[in-house]
Image (cartoon, rainbow, N blue to C red):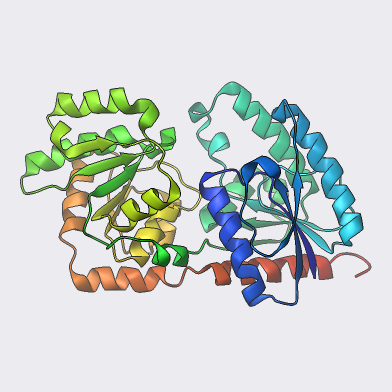
Length: 359
């Protein structure tokens, strides 16, 4: 099967992690497939030995990208003689390409929690995602939560083929650092991460008594003054360190050595840090959020409400987790592999090709 992988949206964060590890695993489980990757030259996406076409989008990107994407995708489908297109993000060619289109859907946060996005961002996503949904022959969802959100919000898509292909976690096994020797870690790079709730929860946990680890807030550089002021106000400034974006190696060593990972997000499409921590034997605290509950599989310490006191109780429970509980969580997370993700995704695309009229 010849697969054109459209990866122009893999700029940073979870989508970039997803694309790079999916591409790395694919030849191992489906060596008979031929892949051609379409990437944005400015993103410096790692594609290994795979044949890659790098596209110069131009400026302004918001206008130039749809047109460049459409021209390049349709041209490469013909020249590569692709059997199928895999769009790794729900923004792809504006026109049908003549071959089946499988679209990866990561989350629908902009529809479910629209207040977390600017009006312009919501309008752009509505238009671009909407067009992609019209063209898609099938969907690869990163979680059951995302698939359920998709068909609930867009009932007309319920009859189209879909598959859930969870992310892998095995890449975290290669991270430097010794698990459970470092500080607790939480995240602040998007508003759904609720880093202020974690700081409030740290103060509540201190009131409960007992020792608490230092808490490092990653991705919070733009909010540093606000978060540090909140920590001082609550009397936990000695326990809180706010960091901005870290280079990959520093990020991996810090998270890979964490004594605890706290994910207080009110919305996730998957929740990759949950399984990354578990596969390294690190205890995890999560909120009662569907995607994280799904991937944690009962092995995380769950807040019973979005309240500082509930987070404090969950933190204490996680810090007290014994070796048997952590071993069970690690075994669960070891089931999340990129080879499994690639195998499921490739098999699904093959069904789209076979079900195409005339195939």
